[in-house]
Amino acid sequence: MARLFALAVLLASGSALAQQKKAPTPKEAGDQTYTIPVVAEEPFKAVMDRDVRDKAEVMRRQKALLESRYDLSNRPAKMAMSGGRKPVQQGVRVKLPAGVTWDQLAAMRPEEIREKGLFPQGFLPLPHVKHAAGGMVFPKMEIDEIKKQEERSLQRFDVDFDLPEHLLPEFPPPIFLSQRPDLGDVSQGKVLTIRNFFELMNGKLTPVQMDGLRQLLTPFPQAEFNATDSRKATEASTGVACLDCHVNGHTNGTFHLNPDNRPQAARLRIETVSLRGMFNQQIHGSKRSLRSVEDFTEFEQRTAYFNGDIADAAKKGVNEPDRPTQVANMAQMQNMFDFPPAPKLLPTGRLDPAQATDLEKLGEKVFWEKGQCATCHVPVTAFMDNNMHDLRVERFYKPQTVNDQLIHAEGPIKTFTLRGIKDSPPYLHDGRLLTLEDAVEFFNLVLGTKLDAREKEALVHYLQAI
Image 1: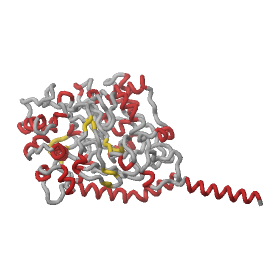
Image 2 (image 1 turned 120 degrees about the vertical axis):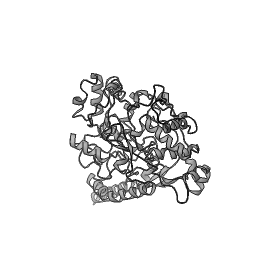
Image 3 (image 1 turned 180 degrees about the vertical axis):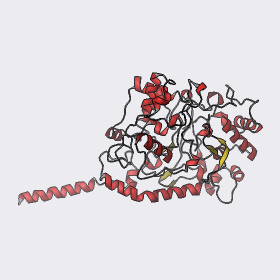
Image 4 (image 1 turned 180 degrees about the horizontal axis):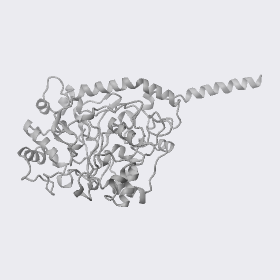
């Protein structure tokens, strides 16, 4: 009898303990610093089944948001990206609020736009396709190529990529080497992978650079692609390679969430930046002042790969490359990826008057003077200033939540290079600006430069030339 009583007490206390340790609600989890449990709280199959069931609604909601904000149509310009395989998209794609024009909006004060709710929705931060979960999301073109070459899947079972492929960078992008500009594009129209890099780069790179490239192409466990029960890939995965996102040393539009903000809802969507011209950059990371390519390389292993969560990284198998050898080799290879040629630019960063069109010359004048672009995007230093700047875009809108993202003041963001910018859509750190025309309208409004239609057109032509 005593044993039965003791057993009853034990079962009751166990039940109470289970209730105390129940999984937090999404709202509760969203308010925490640590949102990923180290020990899974439900079976992998149950999570996957639920995510698969919910996927259609997740994608429908994101598609509705994008279509309400943008014109997503395929409107190619006559100009191609640097590899010549894909046209640049043209035209302003951000939709205006009903009843106002761009000129009317530019004439208003920020507080007036804020109070009237007239800030274009496409200028607000762009949520992750599944913001409450986050994680890397790859475009179909990259998923298909890696599956074809390596039989490795970058497909998530819970989400798909959200932006149409015609609004993304050229694929595969050309590869230009800073130490061999005479070779031009060395990609041969192929995507560099662990399977073909030696064949494509033998005789063009040093042994140190080849080793760095090998490591950049080696998959390592990542938060959504790994062998644990918290992955978002159907099958256990060897992980993600650096150049899965920075394909051919450039970008394919892959996005995830920045590691620097908490709670989860306040994190920012981050689009993969190009590695072209890394040799000229002195700070790295959109929200961090990382002072070397080596720092950036090490930092990425715990941030882009594991959301800055050290416990999650330990569970999944973080790669910690050796600083003097592996990190140094990877960094040296990243410094080999060059900007595309810009034949109309002089070594000083100014346009060659003998080659530039009248519209491009006017665009350069706007860039330096009325547009205030050169204040941060200094031509002689690869159209950047290696500083962080706060645009204070929150002057134009009230805090709000959109598709689970808390739209708040974003703080300082580093100045990104504009060299070869026509190859790198979409624009801004989260890809909220789909075309260069969108970028010109955004900065015209946010900086209050009051450019006229001719000046805006000229500025776009200038940006395409650099």
